[in-house]
Length: 69
Image (cartoon, rainbow, N blue to C red):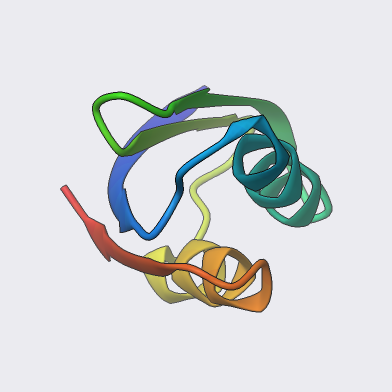
């Protein structure tokens, strides 16, 4: 099991949370995505290590900026 945390900017509402969750959940091996809107953090759990850039790209696909924490 692998856990990664990302800092995301631009999220302002529950629609933002849903968009990020949907895009990141589509990545192979992801088992859980937790978005903390107030803190601007996304926690990704997966069965295998996922390249940071793949997660960042998924978050960008949802329309937001992200960096690994």
